[in-house]
Image 1 (cartoon, protein in one colour):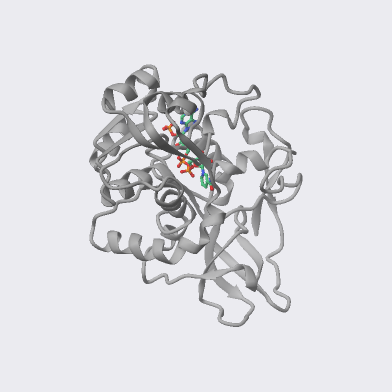
Image 2 (cartoon, helix red, strand yellow):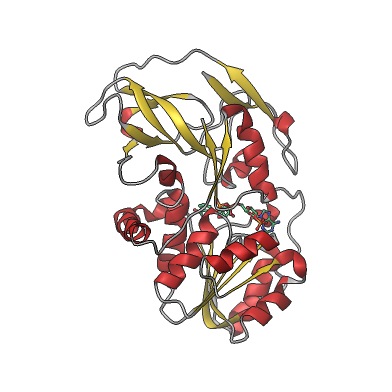
Length: 329
Ligand code: NDP
């Protein structure tokens, strides 16, 4: 069994030196435990926060111990109520080839319904984040104009498509390369721009001449400032992530126009996907239906091998992914 440990805490941008590949024995299950051969693991932006030794909504990763995170694989040993060897389960001990998990902490999935990787992307945590943030937190209504940043990523690409499928009037996305902009237009976004091509507020104004009703924030900073500037009266923002500041040692300079929230009566609402589990069944049903009908597309960027997991995580931070960044083990 090979696993990735956190060797040191990054300051600013992480590097390969912050991680260590360690070989250990394949674990043996005790009562109530299962051994899972991981097939895919997720790398996610929130993991950057857990590399810092600070109090947050999730505990920091320990030094010289394996990292963890979403993973899916096949049960190879152990047995518990409702789960047996051969079953495919979702759990939270990624960053390793073999995981020893508490049987109560796994969720059995149907590998016949979708490729197993989909349970870490479109039908998994990032898909639910998009669904809950857009429909529950921001309460998007048909006909509204939606702007989403980080639009070509796992969450953002779902936000834009769900918005269109649920009747949004106009959907605008921003992303970090011309190829990503092209992909967004192919996915059905009405407008898309590369945030490197000029100030975000200018590009957003041009793309949304009648203003924005709902902003789904994955980036923060100048994107949030631009959105506040473009938002219409009673606009709502679902504050999902602020990746522009995850690797910076300094607090962000923007948004400088927060006072506009008052006159425009805006709602800026932060949320965590973990609080929206009650939507999971409805979410899976609706998303699986759209997938079946060919109305929803999803991209995955897959990196091979546990030894490449740190590089996959760094690549995610640098924007090398289209859709969900995954590691195949
Ligand atoms: P993505 O698949 O969107 O990957 C991250 C993307 O961020 C990169 O591909 C890159 O794309 C973009 N990015 C990186 N740096 C910057 C920058 N400085 N400015 C603008 N864009 C940047 O990741 P996820 O879909 O998993 O996550 C998206 C956001 O949602 C994150 O902020 C994450 O923290 C948050 N999140 C929040 C959850 C919650 O419960 N609140 C749950 C899940 C995710 P590009 O090439 O376009 O720059």
